[in-house]
Amino acid sequence: MRKLLSLRHWQRTFGRIWLLLKSRNVSLLDKLLFTVPVFLYWVLPDVLPIPFLPIDDIAVTMILAEWFARRMESKYNMK
Image (cartoon, rainbow, N blue to C red; front, side, top):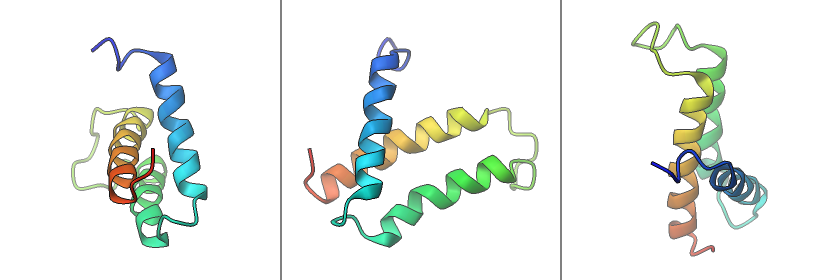
């Protein structure tokens, strides 16, 4: 829990995301797997199957960012 509230943790996570999105080693499909759902949730949150989902846009972005960073780093052996 302490890690999730740490600004340093999220700074590193979003730094890792930025590096992964810029990397030529990560396929375009994998990059879209992160960016499209995040973008759609930011633009169309009430159109999703569960309207008025009580999770904030930034919370969804943070959850997906953590998942994406771990998955891509393990898939492409980056770290």
